Length: 427
Image (cartoon, rainbow, N blue to C red; front, side, top):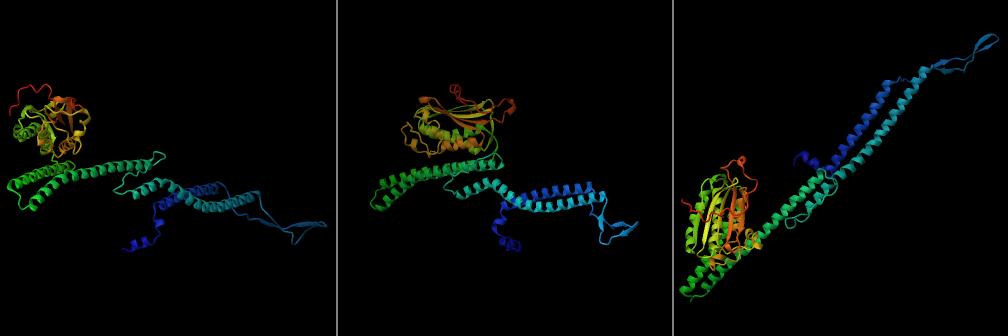
């Protein structure tokens, strides 16, 4: 520890507070202003009037006796002219003013300390409330607020800003806590399945080959589900970081790549995939992330669409916004659940009858919306009741200049309407 730090540690803590420094500042200002005023008055008076100590003349008293002037010893007196007396009065007044000014300065110094201490305490009262609230806050309880009152000054603005920050932190911690609980719940089921099946096979030395094969299939399905969940969790982590590499992307390439990836799984379920697209729209973003949005949309459509139905995938541009959409022919989403489909771990009730319907992680649409918003876009659902649903990704079309007519927000409605009967897209 340095010598200066040692000296500071020996100073009482209350002398090192902001309130003491503000008190000394206010007191110095008040004392300095008062001293300047009194000094100015004294100098103005001393320079405008003539003042000097009285310097009288000793006058001897004489009397006339028998026609002679006779001096009377002991009967002397002091005499001065009127100007000298006036200067003496002025001098005495200046001396009195000086003495009272010194007394006033001493009193003012004491009063300035008291006034400075009170003003500093009143000014720092919101800071004290902020400090107490911050000391009472911990990671498990972010519900406390400062709740500052009084005029809307800088300290009130600071307190309100900290309250807003605490509210955002509270929401973030609540979301994180809920997210961890949901992830734990989603991982517990496949882990339990793996543990139960492996334990049953190992505990029974007489288990047959079909029984072992059945247990292996259950374990394989559970591990696949865990892998998809972990991939989705990684995508969420990347969407919240600065891991995306933004560059110009031809949206048609991302759409075509996703369609190519899910064409075979769709055919395995008897689904027909039709593309209604045209080139042109250019967006700025991460190509892998944009392809993941389309992959998540197609994955949900392949899992949930009724066997033998048609999936329509399209892309284009409207009002300065590039769009890519995936439409299915069922089972539809009721109005009450149209916003919930974007919640984490939400799973609707599919009607296709396949086991694959419930095989998702419940994170696909949530991840897709987060990625869309990180690219200054939107992911919306347009429901057609039992006739199916269309998920539309809207992104700013950078092939068109903003001044050429891009609207502030994406258009409404289903851009695929009227395109489902168009000729298929040719690669």
